[in-house]
Image (cartoon, rainbow, N blue to C red; front, side, top):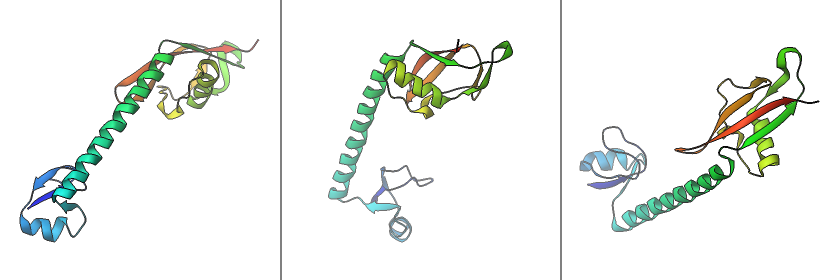
Length: 150
């Protein structure tokens, strides 16, 4: 019996795959547990349209991420804050602070979760190369300069 999987099934296939399963397994296990639907022509067309919609969504997200990358890649963001002796900051610079400064200085909206800080936070006056993971495979490099308020 041909079925369309609604979720990943170990040993059979991944979600949205059109697979051949034994009749008893399909009827008594997959269909009863809503893990698959019967592969009728209507269901196959619905599956194909969903796959096209997902593919189109991925293409638009990819294009938007590429546009944002072009606007921030290689740019410099300056953050001014208070610092103590030896250039140690009072507090730290977080991804939220960097996202706010990107919006102010470069006029680009970036989610703070996409900014990658390897040491969790910036705690000293320094110049840092910060990667921004915009989409799968699209990473922009941003220079964050932390300066002391004069």
